[in-house]
Length: 121
Image 1 (spheres, rainbow, N blue to C red):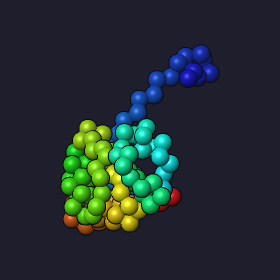
Image 2 (image 1 turned 135 degrees about the vertical axis):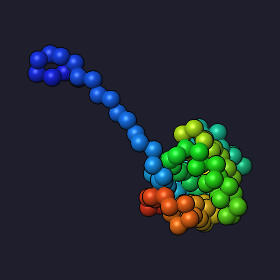
Image 3 (image 1 turned 180 degrees about the vertical axis):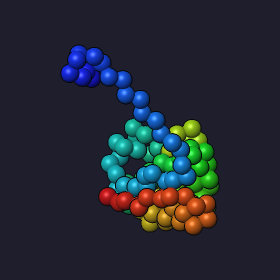
Image 4 (image 1 turned 45 degrees about the vertical axis):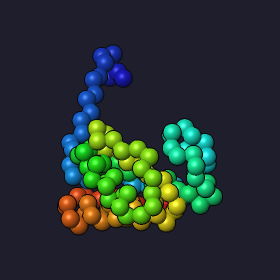
């Protein structure tokens, strides 16, 4: 990137970690190739399955969210990363939706996090 004088401009982006869930989405009936590419459980009924994905800060929150998810219903913990705050779960659409709802409500009501709306497609 350059300005009018031919000099390069350096842009520094910084994030300030707050207590928030920044992304929560339920993918209903995803294509089998998505499971394969993400290394998720291939032994699922793809017709009624879903993938739930979340991102949160601080990233260690993913550990708490993982615990809530597996205790809230019949979901498979596909990925939980305490360094990036990413959580991926799979299961029946209703179970994944319930798990994400339980997580968002607990983080909002008990831990005082700012949460986003759960989106679905």
